[in-house]
Image (cartoon, rainbow, N blue to C red; front, side, top):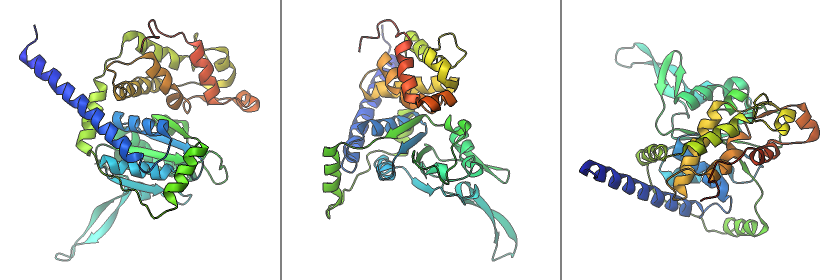
Amino acid sequence: MSTAADIDLTADLERRVARFHAVRDAILAQVRQVIVGQDEVIEQILTALTVGGHCLITGLPGTAKTLMVRTIAKTLGLEFRRIQFTPDLMPADITGTDIIEEDSASGRRRWTFVPGPIFGNILLADEINRTPPKTQSALLEAMQELSCTVRGNHYELPRPFCVLATQNPIELEGTYPLPEAQLDRFLFNTVLDYLSAEEEVQVVDRTTTTRVAQVETVTQAAELLDFQDLVRRVPVGESVARYAVQLVRATRQGDDGAPEVVKKYVSYGASVRAAQFVVLAAKARALAHRRYHVSYEDITALAFPVLRHRILLNFHAESDRVGADEILRQLIAHVPAPAGAGAR
């Protein structure tokens, strides 16, 4: 027999879930007033935000990467900050720095911390691969610990905090590839592709007139933190969790379950953090699709953005022009699905 406390708890969860769906639908409606197409990319960014993760957005110039991030931040009611990464950018330009100020009354001088652009809710790291590793590393502590250290002083970042970094895949001159340690901090590596012909016509129609789309704020930071807690409450069956772990372990060359394509083309596979991220993101996807348990299809749908930047390919892959996505396709086909995976 259910107690009053159980009934109240169930009613509260139902209310929170209903609010989650209402806010998500409203966000999509607002974003689509500005952004044409790219539904999968938008969904992955929203998933990253609802699990408290970071997202690396890889796309060609002119694919509305910056506009998309700015629009989503506005609809969420979050403080948006943008950093244009350049070769001469210094770590203090990101984290902030201490300056000496003089008290006009006493004449005494003191150190005063001036926060950098990292002290916001959504940080757009534009063209993150254009700055040297020393400056890139300034984001490591912030992305992992949600804090930064300046001159030995520890500063907490506002919650929620999410880094959405962009990079262009075709420009090599003057760029600094992200080290594996920093790539591993990103929940997703989301790829923006070209729009269809019909979608490009819509973009031209929308952007070559006097019409300016205005998006409205539909939620706030405190509610987004509540959604992050709600996502973690979504249950995942043992068979599905084991499948996620098997999938990640199969990316490692020395694992018994690794397929031949991995043994031939992969130098280093994904870490246990990848398995954590796959399951956590799958929980958010399941909830977004109005399901209250994680399914096999949630894992396979998110395997590509979670794993494509976590497998380090060898020179055989480069010479044979085999990319990470092709390896992951063969990997998913190789790893057996859990029992009952056909049920939606």
